[in-house]
Amino acid sequence: MPSIDSEDARQRFASARVATLGTTNPAGEVDLVPITFAIDDDRLVSAVDHKPKTTVRLQRLDNIRANPHVTVLAHRYDEEWDGLWWVRVRGDARVVSTGRRHRQAVDSLVAKYPQLVGTPPTGSVIIVEIDEWLAWTARRSEQAGG
Image: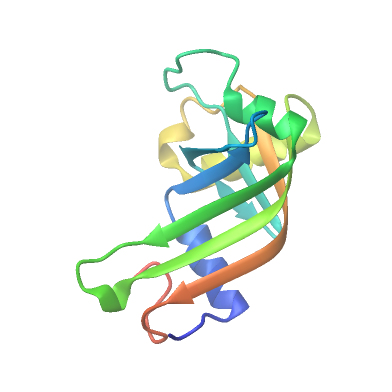
């Protein structure tokens, strides 16, 4: 199974439109939630956006405050299995509600997602300091995102 070099892994991950955030809840169980995100060097940013939520007190934010270790997975599925790939990052996250880091995270998300231009996120942002990248592809010659 071909591996992906670090630059290719970063490009694939950054180009993904959605990823899955894994946090650990107080019972020690893993909670998974789809997120939109942007990559800035070795930082992943995500935000609580305007889409309807069942509550304003989100479990993912509480989980991060209690245990900052997170895992995020982006992947591509294709019926032609030669096109399969995944990239997983791990790191420590923090929740930021105001300030320069918050504005930078929102700006990064607005730059990636045109849907956010008219209604940029105003809620808390998650900032993950990535300390591990792991990736796999079924075919080494595939282009990022392709």
